[in-house]
Length: 190
Image 1 (cartoon, rainbow, N blue to C red):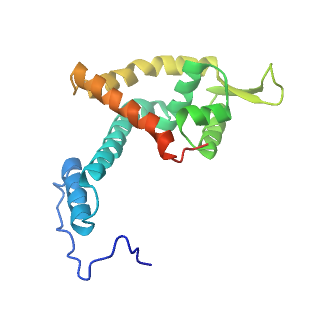
Image 2 (spheres, one colour):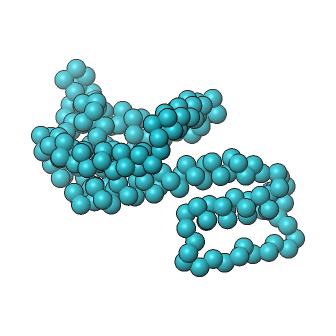
Image 3 (cartoon, rainbow, N blue to C red):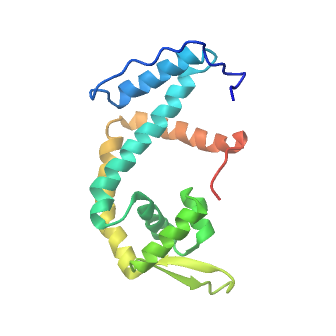
């Protein structure tokens, strides 16, 4: 069904095909240009911003995951759960979900895998026997300690592409987006 707000042009010229030289920034510009030409009422600036955020986040995550975490046998998501427990201590699964932004199903599956691998435990809370808390085992804590330096080294290399002032500016702007998500009524994983 056609959306009346975004009518499809009668004759759409297919986008120019690019060879293997198409890189991240070129493909991003191609996407923004296509949007602007096919949806004149769109905001190319907004599209560029969100595409930049999501694509560079994907590149950074893949880089750190493939260089640091995969060699240890876990994914970026696994590290997020382990690191969250390393920083916060024992948590309920729902708290891990809230703190990582991951889905309940994703956290549940990861908790089972990480428990099977001996990196975390699940136990009834001593203060509220109705709840189950997830915590790092000694092996899990040692593994996070072991990999954290390599992880942070990659973070520093990526952040080092910006000056200190630029890092502060970007951090401030990203915090503004995070705070604004509530005002937008953004869907968040629960």
